[in-house]
Amino acid sequence: MNRDKLYIYTIYDHPSDYPLFYVVRRFAVDEAGPVRDNDPFAINEDIEIIHLILQNMGLVFLYRDPTDDPCIIGSYI
Image (cartoon, rainbow, N blue to C red):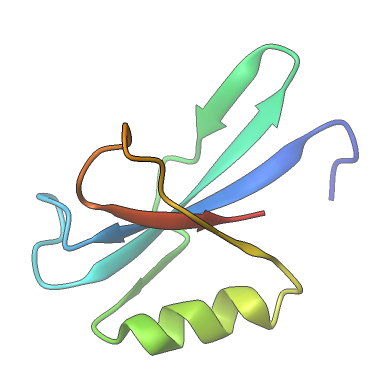
């Protein structure tokens, strides 16, 4: 893992490109700002599976900000 970047994993609630699933997208953040990976990090019908995957990576959950897109559930860092 690159120590010059912070990775943020954002969970989306049935986004328009995957309307039947919860989707996790990974963002790499450095001094230039955030860059999203091209492909989703995880896709699943069960939100609990999504949370378990990210928790097992040792990440911490942050609830969405009220100004975030409404389909964002929150992010793990």
